[in-house]
Structures are given as C-alpha cells and as structure tokens.
Image: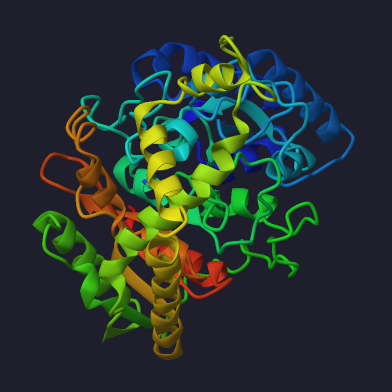
Length: 476
Ligand code: GLN
C-alpha cells in the first residue's frame, strides 16, 4: 500500500484500525517530500525531526486508547501562521530566521487533535499575491503543469496537498488566497466566515479581511481539518463566540430543494469560455441532484476590486509598520536609528512596498474620506448585496477565478492583471459570507477548474454539503 495516495479520511481509518502507525506514515510522507518537492517547491521548511517526534507521540497516545480526530495525521501549515520552534517567515526576508516563541491558535488546535506538522509551506510575501511568485524564497510550481503557477497566496499549501505531500493543509484567505490556489491545483479549499477561526498567531496582512482556511484533496478531508481548527478564542476579539457545529456529520449529500443562486455579474467579460462551460455544467449537475437554480444579481460586484485594493493596502500599511529592525527579525544597521529602519525596511519586496505606498496614500490626511472612507461605504453595499441574495437563495454558485493556472512569469510585472485573478473571490472577504472552491473539471490543457460555492454568515456546513453532493455525484 502506498500510504501517500490515501485521502486524510482513509488514512484516519487505517490509523484507527492500527493497520499502520503514524511514524510509518510520517516517514513515508517525508521521503516523498525529499523525492518530489525539489521540483514543486511547496515547502519552505520541513520540520522532519519534530514531525517524527509528534508521530511517535501520536502512536503512544493511540496505544493508550486516545482517538483524537487527527491523531497521527501529517499536515502542512502556510508559513504565515506562527509555529513555536519552527521558522515562520511570511515569505519575507524581513522575517528570515524568525522562530516564534508561541503557537497560533490553529496550531494549538492541531496539536490538541494529535496532528503531525510536516513543515511550513510557501506563500507570497505577507500573503500579497495570487501566484506565490512574490515569495522572497522560491517559486512554487503547479503539480499539474510545472511551467505554471499554483495560484496564491497559499500556493505552497495547495500544491503540497495536490502533489500528495501532505494530507491536508492550512492557508489564509484575505481576498481569495485559499479558494484561488485550490482551484488552480484541483483541490478543495474553504474560506470560512470572518471570525469563525481565531486569528491569534496569524501574521497580519489586512486584519478586517484575514481568515484561516483549509485545504484537502476531498471535501471530507477539507472538512475534517476545518472541524478541528474552527473556534472562538478570547485572544482574538474579532473571533465569533458561537458553538462549532458538527461539520463532518453535515456532509449528507442531500441537496434536494436547496436554492442555488447564480449571479449574473460573475460571468463577466474576460472569463475563459472553458471555465464558464465547466462551471455552468456543474450548476446543471446541482439541479439534477434536486437543487433549484435561480438567477440572481449582486449589483456592486464590479466595485469589489477597487474597494479591496484600498482597504487591504490601508490595513497592511498599518500592520507592517512593526517591521522596523528593532523588534522583529533581521536588522540592517544604518548610520542612525531612522537610517536603520530605512535600510531594514528595504528588505520588503516590490509588491509589499507597493501596497504600503498605496495604503499610506489612501490613509493620508486630506485623502482619507475620498479613498478609504469611500471604500468602506462600497464594502457596506457589497455586504448588503449578499444579505439581499441570501433572503432568496441558500447558496451562490460561480467560478472561482476567470482563468485556469497561468504561466510562471506571465503576470508578475503586471500588477493589475495579477489582481484580476481574484475579482470573483474578493466580494466574499468584503462581506460576512463564506466560500469554497471544489474541482469541477479541466480545460483543454488539462488544467483544473474550480466551482465556487458561497454561503451566508456561518453557513459553512451548507456549502460544504453542496460541494460534497457534487463531488460524490461526479467522482468515479
Ligand atoms: N491576491 C490578493 C492580494 O494579493 C489576495 C491575497 C490573499 O487572499 N491573501 O491581496
């Protein structure tokens, strides 16, 4: 049996039945990473010694009768999430060699559940990007076509799961960074409702938009990881103090009578015809499974991109102020303190600098109302669009990204075309909804296409179940 090809849920059963030990599985995964990740470059750090120690501990716990949900299951973590004792760079030179003294909330949750941490996955610097090419370290390749990007910013996590280099992985989604790479790599990616998962210990990009999300090769795998990391935590005052439902039990596959909205504004000019065809076929499949299809309108969709590119950089410019060479990471000594700060901040890459400049400008005196203030008003309009839509439908179905994975290098020098990759995912982040990407076919180049399912506030169970019904009906 090649254990690296098992899904997370299959592995979990094999571990429960003691057909295999966590040490064996972890070693098999680490061997596969050594053999295959040179080409894919999905990992920035492989924490092999720690992983094997965690696996041995999981096997001990199992022998004592422990049956924690992810006991002994090897997973990967995006390198923007703090892991005690394991380097956490956020894909940036400004955090090179930073070893957090504490675990993020989600990592605490993973450890409680018995998961084994294989390592940290590549990301665009501070999660700013849609291709993982903005990482200061390596360029991750799409496992389906190594001349193409895996999407981003959680491209390392998506590629690792797609290439069987982890059974599941954590990412973050501020504007699409879980759903878009999931779509490009043919895996399942969930972006929960803002506040569903505590952000404690997640390096901040845009605090009012950031949210941890989960990747799995199947809907059940993505759900199993989400089940474990969801939750409230008083160290993140924006996390929602509401119970965590049994998401795994909600995967019934029954969607009869469910109302599915198809927003006309999401089938825009610029969308590849093959993407549109695959998504429309998936929607027809949902209808076949008993769902009712309704055309709906989300009229302010076209303002999401400009609003996001004011709000996110504004928040980023404030959040990134702390990297001054005094408190975190490396210091580049200058002739005085100001010069030291300047020299150190020159470690930021071009995209991060662009965002800091945009954000600082948008927040500056005299421009605040005109830019940031207006963007916040647009955000309210977008929220209201979803509110109105969810009075009529239970879920919204749409494409994830207008295109399939593009070539490495094709968009790096054209920020606007890079930003457009997220035009259909950003509205979820600006509103109070949740969204996911589930594979729905391939284009003629053999590249995966994703179906986006959007749910109302805290309706993760609903969208996961729709994705599950679709997956069950379409996988052989
Ligand atoms: N691509 C978007 C950006 O560059 C979203 C990134 C994200 O979700 N972290 O800001």
